[in-house]
Image (tube, rainbow, N blue to C red):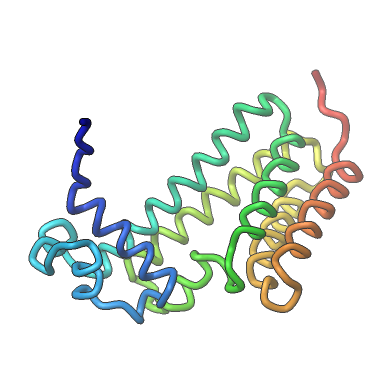
Length: 195
């Protein structure tokens, strides 16, 4: 009989936080509830995270790592093909939207719950969004868009708008429209890429 290795407390705390934050929001969950859901105690939580704010920041770092890994997978699947990367990006975002509940995305909700500019979790989100915008700008330049800065801003507006429009348009329709819009832009606006 094989024994499963026990999950370390830090991982259990992050997993519990993920579940509770998605269900009740960041502000709606206290450290006691997180510790209890992780089958541990507050002392253990504070041994791994100096504060709830730091726990929230680490939780969001994990989400950011998943998003950045997605970009790396896309780059591997479409080497030297910036247009293919932009199109697959839109397809993956559309897929994620179809898997979400009826609320907007985790990062957008987190920003709404964390209005303090110096909150460590807010800094994690803002740094990620800056990196993502730079990546999109680089792809727009490589794809030969006549105005790559404008195109990158427009793609970014699409991404942010798609997440915030789910309640009024619906998840499936938002995702489909995002894919169609990106594909049309890529086909209409990009010059041929030199071999």
